Structure formats: C-alpha cells, structure tokens
Amino acid sequence: MNVVSPMTAKAAAATAAAILAGLSLAACTAKESTDSADGAKSATEVKVTASDDACELSSTEGTTGANTFLVTNNGNKVTEFYVYGEGERVMGEVENISPGLNRKLIVQLSEPGTYQLACKPGMVGDGIRSEFTVTGDAVEVDTEGKFKDAADSYKRYINSQVDALIPATQLFVDAIKRGDIEAAKAQFPIARTYYERIEPVAESFPNDLDPRIDLREADLEEGQKWTGFHRLEKDLWVSGLQPDTNAIADQLLADVKELDAGVKAPDFKIDSTQIAGGAQGLLDEVAASKITGEEDIFSHTDLWDFNANVQGSQTAVASVRPILDERDPDLGKRVDQRFAEVEALLMRLRAGDGFVSYDKVTEPQRQELSRAIDALSKEVSQVQGVIAGQ
Image 1 (cartoon, one colour):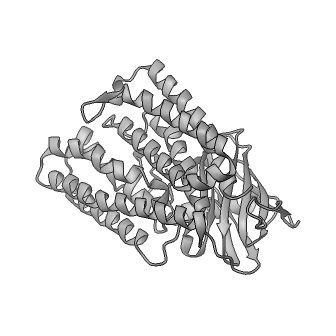
Image 2: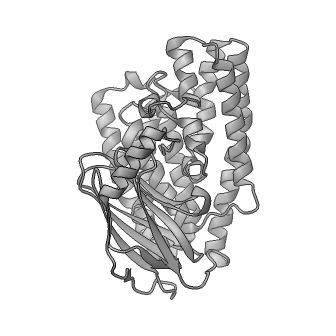
Image 3: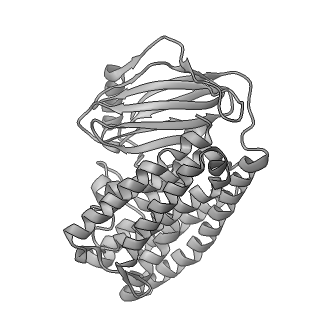
C-alpha cells in the first residue's frame, strides 16, 4: 500500500538530511533502448540502486516516451520506487521491493519537463528524491487501435468499480452511524472489494488519497492522523465505537467520492503500460501483506482483499490482452493458467458468499497460496515489457 503522509518539521528535516547524504547522481546520458515491436523508439533506461539511506541513479535525464527504471534494493529495508509528475501525480510506481531483489518499472512520460524520482526505504515518508529531466517532443500514447481500446476498456472498468464503491461505502457508514455493529462488520469486506480491485489507480492521485482511505495502523508515522477503512476496522472489531468514529466514517465516504471525481475528471488518463504495471502492483499487494494476514489484522477478512486484488489484476491483463496475444501469445496462455490455479485455491476457502476467516487458514494452506501467487506474479511481471514493446 502506498504510504505518503505530511511530515512534521522534525521529520522533514531528517528526510532532507537523508536526501543530501544519500543522493548520488551520475552525469552520464541515459541508455537508449532498442526499437519497440511496433516500430516506435523506446526512450530511456535508468539503473536505480536503492539502499536504506541512498538512491543512486545512472542518469537524471531521459526523453519522452517509454522510460525504463531497473531498480535494485541493496538495503536492509523493503523499499519502493516512484516517478512523480506535476502536482505529485504518481506516473508510475513499484512497491514492496525486498532486500536483494530487482524490479523493472516502465513509465510512459509523454510530456517534456521535470519529474521527481523517489526511493522510499521502509516504504514511508516522501523518500529520497531527485529531479529527472525529460526532453523531446510531446508524444501521444494509446490514441488508436488496440492501445486505445485497452485504455478505454480499463477506464470503463475503473468507473464501474467506483460507481459500486460509493453506495457500498454508504451502507457501511450508515451502519456505523446507527450503531449496528454486526451490519457494519458484514459490509466492511464488501465495500473494500471495489476499492481493492483498483487500488493502484487510487495510489496515483496526490494529496495522500490512498493513505486516507487504506492506511494500516502499523504504517502510521508520528503525528499522523489515522483515517479510513482500517481505523474503522479496529473500532468495530477491537476498540469499540469511539467519540470520533462517526466523523472518521464520514471522512471515508468523502474520500471515496474524491476518488470517484478524480477518475471521472476530463484530464484523467491511464495508458496500457500503466494498466499492465497495475496488474503487477495488485499481485505485489497480495504477496506483501494479504498472504501474511497483516492487512486486515483485526477482522481477518484478508481473503476478500486477496480475491479482489487477483480479480483486479486479471481484469487489467484482460484489457491489454489483444496486444499481448499479438506480441507474445504464449505468455498470455501461461498467465491464464496461473490465474486459474490461484482461483482454484481461493474457491476451496469460500464460505457462503464470502470467505473463511483468515485466522482459520492453516500455515500449509497459506504457503500453497503464496507459491501460487508467486508463480502468477512471475508471469504477469513480464506483461508490462511486452506491452511497452521492450
């Protein structure tokens, strides 16, 4: 989950010191990739070496088009890597990069200008940042053919999910405010399903929208106000309703309406490369927190989230599938097989219209799920490169 919060003056000073101490920028020109499969020139390839106190880049310059970032975590903390556009808009991200792992992120930067790159050791704060200058003519992305169809199809899916998220959240909030604890508990995983299917989209918006909706207690920073689903989860399952519970519920509803307005704004765009990256991001969510049970730690409704993430990933891949089938049909078949294997395991854990409580899932069952999601993730991780023509 994306965790970006306003910092206190003390924390900001500490972060600034870390940035000054850790930032190491090479002056060389970024490596230009080979031509993509559709004949378009790929743009930039930048090596990112992350540690607990540094974010070293092989270049701080790129060109418009598909920019590739090869991220290696040499630190001791799990890290994240982000590309920010104007107004802190997330252009691309890769999360949950464990120590010793390498990850690839491809981002379409269609406009020349100055972007921000950030490594986030521990996956908190504003991160260790540097400017990334993009030159060249503005390029249009996904404006015709299968690429436009993919973007249009996925935008329709996003809209359908937020259209369902608002009334589902309203039912959840109404139950809380009338003190109907059992009804609120029953509605909690249902409302979250619509959010979890499209969480990478929510993470792309500035103003801490995703943390306001979905921040876990374990990820709170000093002085940060805790709002959203998980704060209400704790009130319902552990603490009991608090004096500010109703206000937190109202804020959650306002935040999901903000998400709705954002995805339906005329300037909201999502390209096929982002869609494929989001498919991988949703699986990372499962591998990092759902499989361990730390996401819904109070309610143990993790399997609802797990299932929603897998469904969202599968829909994202389906949106770009015509492109994938044209460029690498064998990969598409392997992805289908892996999705089917995960779905079969989840079906065994069904209970009525939902799922068994995750604290009832045995360790061998969790390990089996983990192996299946890892196998799926390995295949889906290749989709973004194929879609971007790299």
